[in-house]
Length: 464
Image (cartoon, rainbow, N blue to C red; front, side, top):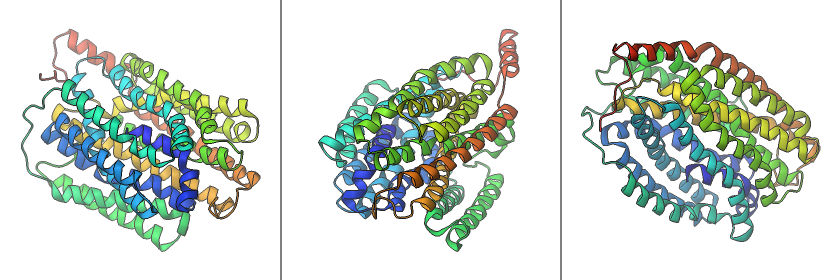
């Protein structure tokens, strides 16, 4: 549900914008109101998962997501739609850490990378069908049904969870780190708001600079609070481990690079190239199928060789795909577009699972929810950053959006080409970070030898 709705919405944005008379900045908020709320509450969702158990939090979050989807689907104004999207993000902040923590806790003694690959592949499956579903629903029923379809999907998810997920056991009892929760939420919101509004006010505006300053101050308070807490929300000592801090950094930067492809290429194909929503969805299918196939294989590769090699190669492929997209995909025929997107999809499939496995590392079971929340916060901040950077470049060439006048294909393609080249440079830098920080084969081989010799390991057996 979390992935299908967003990818389907990417295809429906032009229709939604025309019906509700929303400009480019407002459409970015339709996407970012969800991701910003998701980012702000992810640590709280992770904390609840560690205290209440993954099953309970998953059921609660899914129920709230169904209600928020009804609000979004029935909205007749931009403000009501934004309210529904915000509620969806808050509900998703409960679901995401719960699912990831459940998978990580179940596969603690072996096969975690492959299991996380299946977890990533489940999201990639929705990514693969999302644009097509969005196109079909938009053309036949209208964009509102992209949200309303979450109601039967959500009910099915609740029934499946009650039947399949194990009951949550006793969890660790501790006080609530309210100061840490408040400081982290303030930091993520301030930074996310500043990035979202950068396209409207300019990167040097008081709104943007003030938001970034408030975010930096709140983050400083968060660090000071966590270092003094006896039972902190986030154990910051884990970030002294190069692999954990590097994995979260790679996740943030890689998501910033990846996320803009669906959003802006979808707008380009429909507004400048005259593609229908269905044709736009079909154009993304080779890329997303590759993600679906490669993600579990990358997880198995990470189990055997460590996370460094697949993540580094994946980021290099993303950089190559973005360069191809800027030179041939936007200016050539359909073949150039599909091949460029396919290279990007192959890179994404190689990166996501190994980085997820590295970020969770040897996190104890009772801290898996917060660790998952931290990782997904990095992902959501990266998504907001990526859309903000792309939006600023595109808006300079296309200030009015299609709410004012049809796009000029040359100007829009020129802005996107420049943005994709910049993103390719970021992808190359991210590949260097992955190569320098993520673990290779040696740490994993040592861990296996330790288990064979009967020595203790930091990987605890799962309690059933």
